[in-house]
Length: 311
Image (cartoon, rainbow, N blue to C red):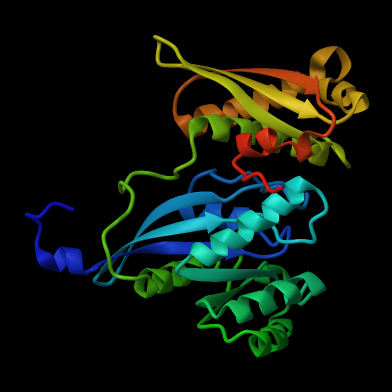
Protein backbone atom coordinates (compact mmCIF):
# COMPACT_ATOMS: atom_id res chain seq x y z
CA UNK A 1 0.00 0.00 0.00
CA UNK A 2 1.54 3.33 -1.06
CA UNK A 3 1.80 6.39 1.21
CA UNK A 4 -0.40 8.35 -1.21
CA UNK A 5 -3.48 6.18 -0.55
CA UNK A 6 -6.05 7.51 1.93
CA UNK A 7 -5.55 6.61 5.55
CA UNK A 8 -9.13 5.31 5.65
CA UNK A 9 -8.23 2.62 3.09
CA UNK A 10 -5.28 1.53 5.19
CA UNK A 11 -7.35 1.55 8.37
CA UNK A 12 -9.95 -0.84 6.97
CA UNK A 13 -7.36 -3.43 5.95
CA UNK A 14 -6.99 -6.61 7.95
CA UNK A 15 -4.57 -9.48 7.51
CA UNK A 16 -3.71 -12.61 9.43
CA UNK A 17 -3.08 -16.34 9.45
CA UNK A 18 -5.89 -18.85 9.94
CA UNK A 19 -4.76 -22.43 10.61
CA UNK A 20 -7.05 -25.33 9.74
CA UNK A 21 -6.34 -28.26 12.05
CA UNK A 22 -8.05 -31.56 12.74
CA UNK A 23 -7.86 -35.31 12.52
CA UNK A 24 -6.99 -37.03 9.22
CA UNK A 25 -9.77 -36.91 6.61
CA UNK A 26 -11.74 -34.16 8.35
CA UNK A 27 -11.82 -32.27 5.03
CA UNK A 28 -9.10 -29.66 5.66
CA UNK A 29 -7.68 -29.70 2.13
CA UNK A 30 -11.15 -29.68 0.57
CA UNK A 31 -11.99 -26.64 2.71
CA UNK A 32 -8.82 -24.79 1.69
CA UNK A 33 -9.37 -25.47 -2.00
CA UNK A 34 -13.03 -24.47 -1.81
CA UNK A 35 -12.33 -21.22 0.02
CA UNK A 36 -9.50 -20.14 -2.30
CA UNK A 37 -11.15 -21.42 -5.48
CA UNK A 38 -7.90 -23.12 -6.53
CA UNK A 39 -6.37 -26.60 -6.32
CA UNK A 40 -3.62 -25.81 -3.82
CA UNK A 41 -3.79 -28.83 -1.54
CA UNK A 42 -4.12 -32.36 -2.87
CA UNK A 43 -7.19 -34.36 -1.91
CA UNK A 44 -7.94 -38.06 -1.77
CA UNK A 45 -10.30 -40.33 0.19
CA UNK A 46 -7.29 -41.79 2.02
CA UNK A 47 -6.14 -40.42 5.37
CA UNK A 48 -2.86 -38.52 5.83
CA UNK A 49 -2.77 -37.20 2.26
CA UNK A 50 -1.43 -33.77 3.27
CA UNK A 51 2.17 -33.94 4.49
CA UNK A 52 3.14 -30.30 5.05
CA UNK A 53 1.61 -26.90 5.61
CA UNK A 54 -0.04 -25.37 2.54
CA UNK A 55 -0.74 -21.64 2.44
CA UNK A 56 -3.77 -20.36 0.54
CA UNK A 57 -4.01 -16.59 0.07
CA UNK A 58 -7.44 -15.10 -0.43
CA UNK A 59 -8.94 -11.63 -0.46
CA UNK A 60 -12.28 -10.94 1.20
CA UNK A 61 -14.38 -7.78 1.32
CA UNK A 62 -17.03 -7.59 4.01
CA UNK A 63 -18.90 -4.33 4.63
CA UNK A 64 -16.17 -1.72 5.24
CA UNK A 65 -13.39 -4.28 5.67
CA UNK A 66 -10.88 -5.56 3.13
CA UNK A 67 -9.05 -8.59 4.46
CA UNK A 68 -6.26 -10.81 3.26
CA UNK A 69 -7.01 -14.17 4.85
CA UNK A 70 -3.95 -16.43 4.94
CA UNK A 71 -5.37 -19.94 5.23
CA UNK A 72 -2.98 -22.66 6.37
CA UNK A 73 -3.92 -26.25 5.59
CA UNK A 74 -2.08 -28.58 7.96
CA UNK A 75 -1.46 -32.33 8.01
CA UNK A 76 -3.97 -34.42 9.91
CA UNK A 77 -2.93 -34.92 13.53
CA UNK A 78 -2.47 -38.53 14.64
CA UNK A 79 -0.10 -40.64 16.73
CA UNK A 80 3.22 -40.59 14.88
CA UNK A 81 5.46 -43.62 14.37
CA UNK A 82 8.02 -42.79 11.66
CA UNK A 83 10.22 -39.71 11.32
CA UNK A 84 7.92 -38.67 8.47
CA UNK A 85 4.90 -38.94 10.79
CA UNK A 86 6.59 -36.89 13.51
CA UNK A 87 7.52 -34.18 11.02
CA UNK A 88 3.94 -34.06 9.69
CA UNK A 89 2.38 -33.72 13.14
CA UNK A 90 4.97 -31.11 14.14
CA UNK A 91 4.11 -29.12 11.00
CA UNK A 92 0.44 -29.20 11.95
CA UNK A 93 1.02 -27.90 15.47
CA UNK A 94 3.47 -25.25 14.27
CA UNK A 95 0.79 -24.02 11.89
CA UNK A 96 -1.64 -23.69 14.78
CA UNK A 97 0.87 -21.98 17.07
CA UNK A 98 1.80 -19.40 14.42
CA UNK A 99 -1.80 -18.51 13.52
CA UNK A 100 -3.92 -15.59 14.64
CA UNK A 101 -6.99 -17.85 14.63
CA UNK A 102 -7.18 -21.66 14.64
CA UNK A 103 -10.11 -23.49 13.09
CA UNK A 104 -10.69 -26.92 14.60
CA UNK A 105 -12.32 -28.81 11.73
CA UNK A 106 -14.37 -31.79 12.88
CA UNK A 107 -15.99 -34.41 10.67
CA UNK A 108 -19.57 -34.33 12.00
CA UNK A 109 -20.21 -37.83 10.75
CA UNK A 110 -17.45 -39.25 12.94
CA UNK A 111 -18.11 -36.94 15.87
CA UNK A 112 -15.95 -36.73 18.99
CA UNK A 113 -13.34 -39.43 18.44
CA UNK A 114 -10.38 -39.98 20.77
CA UNK A 115 -8.20 -38.19 18.22
CA UNK A 116 -10.46 -35.15 18.07
CA UNK A 117 -10.62 -35.03 21.87
CA UNK A 118 -6.81 -35.03 22.15
CA UNK A 119 -6.52 -32.21 19.59
CA UNK A 120 -9.24 -30.18 21.31
CA UNK A 121 -7.60 -30.54 24.71
CA UNK A 122 -4.25 -29.37 23.40
CA UNK A 123 -5.89 -26.37 21.73
CA UNK A 124 -7.66 -25.58 25.01
CA UNK A 125 -4.39 -25.70 26.93
CA UNK A 126 -2.70 -23.41 24.37
CA UNK A 127 -5.26 -20.68 25.19
CA UNK A 128 -5.11 -19.45 21.61
CA UNK A 129 -8.09 -18.10 19.67
CA UNK A 130 -9.95 -21.17 18.45
CA UNK A 131 -13.11 -21.55 16.39
CA UNK A 132 -15.04 -24.78 15.91
CA UNK A 133 -16.04 -25.69 12.35
CA UNK A 134 -18.24 -28.75 11.97
CA UNK A 135 -17.77 -30.11 8.45
CA UNK A 136 -19.87 -32.50 6.32
CA UNK A 137 -23.02 -31.26 8.04
CA UNK A 138 -24.98 -31.92 4.84
CA UNK A 139 -24.65 -35.65 5.61
CA UNK A 140 -25.85 -35.47 9.23
CA UNK A 141 -29.28 -34.87 10.75
CA UNK A 142 -29.52 -31.41 12.31
CA UNK A 143 -30.57 -32.92 15.62
CA UNK A 144 -27.23 -34.72 15.92
CA UNK A 145 -25.18 -31.55 15.46
CA UNK A 146 -26.34 -29.66 18.56
CA UNK A 147 -25.29 -32.36 21.08
CA UNK A 148 -21.92 -32.69 19.33
CA UNK A 149 -21.43 -28.92 19.43
CA UNK A 150 -22.33 -28.81 23.12
CA UNK A 151 -19.90 -31.61 24.00
CA UNK A 152 -17.03 -29.98 22.11
CA UNK A 153 -17.81 -26.56 23.58
CA UNK A 154 -17.47 -28.07 27.05
CA UNK A 155 -13.91 -29.08 26.14
CA UNK A 156 -12.76 -25.81 24.53
CA UNK A 157 -14.00 -22.23 24.98
CA UNK A 158 -14.51 -21.62 21.24
CA UNK A 159 -14.95 -18.02 20.14
CA UNK A 160 -17.39 -19.07 17.42
CA UNK A 161 -19.01 -22.20 16.01
CA UNK A 162 -19.80 -22.73 12.32
CA UNK A 163 -21.52 -25.59 10.53
CA UNK A 164 -20.38 -26.06 6.95
CA UNK A 165 -20.06 -28.43 4.03
CA UNK A 166 -16.66 -27.88 2.42
CA UNK A 167 -17.64 -30.14 -0.46
CA UNK A 168 -20.85 -28.26 -1.29
CA UNK A 169 -19.83 -24.80 -0.07
CA UNK A 170 -22.63 -24.51 2.50
CA UNK A 171 -21.95 -21.99 5.28
CA UNK A 172 -18.59 -20.82 3.92
CA UNK A 173 -19.58 -17.23 3.11
CA UNK A 174 -20.59 -16.61 6.73
CA UNK A 175 -17.33 -18.15 7.93
CA UNK A 176 -15.23 -15.98 5.60
CA UNK A 177 -17.04 -12.77 6.53
CA UNK A 178 -16.51 -13.50 10.22
CA UNK A 179 -12.80 -14.22 9.67
CA UNK A 180 -12.39 -10.99 7.69
CA UNK A 181 -13.70 -8.96 10.64
CA UNK A 182 -11.82 -10.97 13.28
CA UNK A 183 -8.29 -10.73 11.86
CA UNK A 184 -5.90 -8.05 13.16
CA UNK A 185 -5.81 -4.68 11.43
CA UNK A 186 -2.69 -4.31 9.33
CA UNK A 187 -1.17 -4.27 5.85
CA UNK A 188 -1.38 -7.20 3.45
CA UNK A 189 1.61 -9.54 3.57
CA UNK A 190 1.34 -10.83 0.00
CA UNK A 191 0.42 -9.35 -3.40
CA UNK A 192 -3.35 -9.41 -3.81
CA UNK A 193 -3.23 -11.69 -6.88
CA UNK A 194 -1.06 -14.38 -5.23
CA UNK A 195 -2.72 -17.70 -4.46
CA UNK A 196 0.01 -19.46 -2.47
CA UNK A 197 3.65 -19.25 -1.45
CA UNK A 198 4.38 -22.82 -2.56
CA UNK A 199 7.00 -23.09 -5.30
CA UNK A 200 5.85 -24.58 -8.61
CA UNK A 201 8.36 -27.41 -8.16
CA UNK A 202 6.60 -28.55 -5.00
CA UNK A 203 3.15 -28.21 -6.54
CA UNK A 204 4.26 -30.45 -9.42
CA UNK A 205 5.47 -33.18 -7.05
CA UNK A 206 2.28 -32.94 -5.00
CA UNK A 207 -0.01 -33.37 -8.01
CA UNK A 208 1.94 -36.49 -8.96
CA UNK A 209 1.55 -37.82 -5.42
CA UNK A 210 -2.18 -37.06 -5.49
CA UNK A 211 -2.60 -39.27 -8.55
CA UNK A 212 -0.65 -42.04 -6.82
CA UNK A 213 -3.13 -41.83 -3.94
CA UNK A 214 -6.09 -41.89 -6.32
CA UNK A 215 -4.85 -44.64 -8.62
CA UNK A 216 -3.18 -47.08 -6.22
CA UNK A 217 -4.39 -48.82 -3.09
CA UNK A 218 -3.48 -49.98 0.39
CA UNK A 219 0.05 -49.18 1.54
CA UNK A 220 1.61 -47.92 -1.70
CA UNK A 221 0.63 -44.22 -1.34
CA UNK A 222 2.12 -44.12 2.16
CA UNK A 223 5.29 -45.88 1.06
CA UNK A 224 6.26 -43.40 -1.64
CA UNK A 225 7.18 -39.78 -2.13
CA UNK A 226 7.63 -37.53 -5.16
CA UNK A 227 10.39 -34.98 -5.76
CA UNK A 228 10.82 -32.54 -8.63
CA UNK A 229 14.36 -33.02 -9.94
CA UNK A 230 14.24 -30.29 -12.62
CA UNK A 231 11.88 -27.51 -13.67
CA UNK A 232 13.00 -25.96 -16.96
CA UNK A 233 11.34 -23.05 -18.74
CA UNK A 234 11.15 -23.52 -22.52
CA UNK A 235 11.33 -20.80 -25.20
CA UNK A 236 7.71 -21.45 -26.28
CA UNK A 237 6.40 -20.58 -22.78
CA UNK A 238 5.88 -24.20 -21.72
CA UNK A 239 7.83 -25.95 -18.99
CA UNK A 240 9.55 -29.34 -18.76
CA UNK A 241 9.23 -30.98 -15.35
CA UNK A 242 11.08 -34.12 -14.25
CA UNK A 243 9.73 -35.82 -11.13
CA UNK A 244 11.21 -38.84 -9.35
CA UNK A 245 8.93 -41.09 -7.34
CA UNK A 246 10.69 -42.99 -4.52
CA UNK A 247 9.15 -46.23 -3.24
CA UNK A 248 10.17 -48.41 -0.32
CA UNK A 249 10.01 -51.88 -1.92
CA UNK A 250 10.66 -53.52 -5.30
CA UNK A 251 7.07 -54.82 -5.43
CA UNK A 252 5.73 -51.30 -5.03
CA UNK A 253 7.85 -50.11 -7.94
CA UNK A 254 6.43 -52.80 -10.20
CA UNK A 255 2.84 -51.96 -9.22
CA UNK A 256 3.40 -48.24 -9.69
CA UNK A 257 4.91 -48.68 -13.14
CA UNK A 258 2.21 -51.15 -14.22
CA UNK A 259 2.07 -53.46 -17.21
CA UNK A 260 4.42 -52.04 -19.87
CA UNK A 261 4.40 -48.70 -18.03
CA UNK A 262 0.61 -48.25 -18.27
CA UNK A 263 0.05 -47.15 -14.65
CA UNK A 264 2.85 -44.58 -14.46
CA UNK A 265 1.78 -43.13 -17.83
CA UNK A 266 -1.76 -42.68 -16.57
CA UNK A 267 -0.51 -41.07 -13.36
CA UNK A 268 1.68 -38.70 -15.38
CA UNK A 269 -1.09 -37.79 -17.80
CA UNK A 270 -3.60 -36.92 -15.06
CA UNK A 271 -0.99 -34.95 -13.08
CA UNK A 272 0.10 -33.07 -16.21
CA UNK A 273 -3.46 -31.93 -16.95
CA UNK A 274 -3.90 -30.68 -13.40
CA UNK A 275 -0.56 -28.92 -13.40
CA UNK A 276 -1.15 -27.22 -16.77
CA UNK A 277 -4.44 -25.89 -15.43
CA UNK A 278 -2.89 -24.67 -12.18
CA UNK A 279 0.14 -23.03 -13.82
CA UNK A 280 -1.91 -21.81 -16.79
CA UNK A 281 0.60 -22.97 -19.38
CA UNK A 282 1.56 -26.19 -21.20
CA UNK A 283 3.54 -28.63 -19.06
CA UNK A 284 5.67 -31.55 -20.22
CA UNK A 285 5.87 -33.97 -17.29
CA UNK A 286 8.32 -36.88 -17.12
CA UNK A 287 8.21 -39.42 -14.29
CA UNK A 288 10.88 -41.81 -13.03
CA UNK A 289 10.35 -44.45 -10.33
CA UNK A 290 13.19 -45.50 -8.02
CA UNK A 291 13.37 -47.91 -5.11
CA UNK A 292 14.78 -46.31 -1.96
CA UNK A 293 14.18 -48.24 1.24
CA UNK A 294 13.85 -46.04 4.33
CA UNK A 295 13.28 -42.77 2.47
CA UNK A 296 10.74 -41.77 5.15
CA UNK A 297 13.53 -41.67 7.75
CA UNK A 298 15.90 -39.52 5.64
CA UNK A 299 16.20 -35.85 6.55
CA UNK A 300 16.99 -34.89 2.94
CA UNK A 301 13.83 -36.55 1.65
CA UNK A 302 11.70 -34.82 4.29
CA UNK A 303 13.19 -31.42 3.49
CA UNK A 304 12.55 -32.03 -0.20
CA UNK A 305 8.80 -32.39 0.45
CA UNK A 306 8.61 -29.28 2.61
CA UNK A 307 9.09 -30.78 6.08
CA UNK A 308 11.70 -30.08 8.70
CA UNK A 309 14.10 -32.86 9.64
CA UNK A 310 13.22 -34.13 13.11
CA UNK A 311 15.91 -36.21 14.78
